[in-house]
Image (tube, rainbow, N blue to C red; front, top):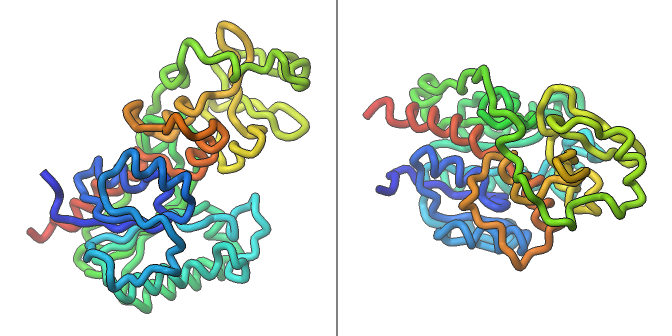
Length: 317
C-alpha cells in the first residue's frame, strides 16, 4: 500500500534518500538528477518519474504536488576536501537558492536536506546561518543534527553527515525528534564476500610491496591515501567518497584469505546500507559505480530519520 505522503527528490543520485524514505513508508513520485549515469542506476531501481536534467531547467509548478522535498545537495563547496568557497562556488553554492525556488512554488510540508558536517563550520558558521535564515524566511521551523552511520544504524561506516529537517507546521516540528544512538553495529565480516574477482586484487600493482608491508590484519579496513596506508583502528569502514571512482585510490582495502584487495562495488553498497537486491547496472564501469556509491547516503540512517518524520506527521491524525 502506497503512503499518502508523497516525496519529490532533488539531487537524487542513485536514490539513497528515496530508498530510505520508502523503507519508512513514504512514496517517491518524482526525482531529479543531472548525472546521466546516476539517473541510469536510479531508473533501474525506482518506478517514479525521473527528470534527468539540470534542476535549473525545470519549472517546479509543472511537477506533481508533494508533501516532502528531499535533497542531498552538492557538498563540494562546503567540504573539507573541497576549496570551501561556499556560496561563491558556482558548482554548488548558489544551487541552494534553486532549492528555495522549488520550496516557494511547491510549499512542501517537510524539507529534508543532507550535507557534510563541515557545512556547520564553513566560513565560521556564516554559510549555515544563511541557509537557516533562508529556510526560516519560507516559514519553516528547523531541527538539525550531525549523525555518524555506525552510531545510528547497524552499518559499520565512519561517515558523519548533517541532516536538516524543516517543518512547515509548528505542531509537526514539536513532535519530531531525531533517532537515538544505537549501541551496536554489525561486524565488518558480514558485509564482505568470501570470493572476489581477481581484478580487485593488488598482486600485480606497483603499490603491492607497500600495501603488503602495512596491511596485515584480516578484520580491519584500510585505505591507500596517496602516499601511505591508513588503518581504521575503530573496526569501521572509512567514509566512502565520490573520488573512489577516480583511479580508485580511496577505495577501502582489505586482506582476505587470498590476498590484498579493494572492496567491490557491491560491498561498498552494503557499507552504505543498500540491500543486495538493489541493482548496480552491469553496463556501468566499476569506477562509475564506486563514484555513485561514494556520492550516496547511508540508507538506514535516512530510514531511521524518516520513520520519526512519519510519526510527527501522523501525530495529529
